[in-house]
Image 1 (tube, one colour):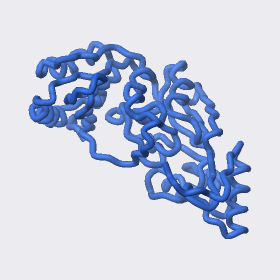
Image 2: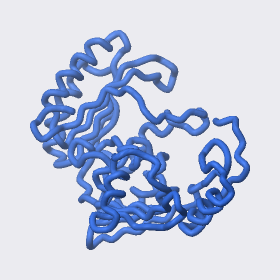
Image 3: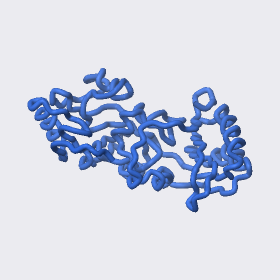
Image 4: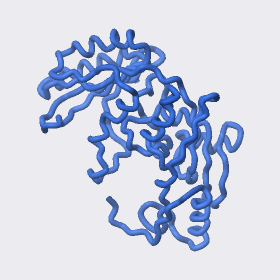
Length: 280
C-alpha cells in the first residue's frame, strides 16, 4: 500500500529483537518507522496465554482478534475487542478499540491491565498499575509513540450467549431506517450493540441495514430485538443465536486485505447501551 522502501525490514522473533532494533536505529541515527529507515515487523509474534483461574490473558502484537478469541472462548471467557476478526489486537487496543461488547464492557483499552514495552532508549520495561503506571495510562488512551509494545495483558469476562446478524432494508427506506436508529440510541440496553450502515449486498445491490449483537440472557435478548426485527419489516432477517467467534467474523469479507486500504478512523452510526439506559 505504501510506495516507499525501507533500508531494512526486521522480522522480530521476540522482545529482545525489538529492543536490539531500536538501539541499532539510535546508534546509527536511522528513522524507525513503517515508511522508511528501518521497519520493525511484529507479525510473527502470535503467542497467547490464558489464565483461566485469574481471568486474565496475555497476547503478543501479531495476534489477530480471531486468534485471541479462539484461545479464550473455549474457556467461556472473552475480552471486548473489535468487529473484524483479522484485525491485529495491538493496534486495535492502543487505538481504543470499538467492538460488539462495548455497551456492556467498554473499549478494548479499558481491559488492558499491563504491557511489556521497548522504550525509545531500547530498554524493555513493564507497565502495570503498580509499575510504570503512567506508561500504562498512556497506552490506554493517553496518546501515542510511547514505545513498542511486545506483549499486552488483558482482563477477561464470562462469555454469555450471543444473538446477532444483519437486518436488510431497501435503500429507498434509508431515511426511515436512520430515524428509527436514532430512536434506538435513546433506549439501548447495555447488552445490545446496534450499527446502522449503507451497504452493497453480495449481488451488488445498495441496501440499508442494521447489524445487531445482543450478549446476555437469550430470552431477554429475543424480547429486546423483537421491535428492531419487526421494524420495516426488513426484506431479509439473518439474526439468530450464533457463536461469538462466528459473529465477529461477519464483516471479514468486507475488509479483505486485497482491498489495499487501511482504515484508522471513520464515521459510524453506532448505538451501545450506557449506564443510564441511553445509547452512546
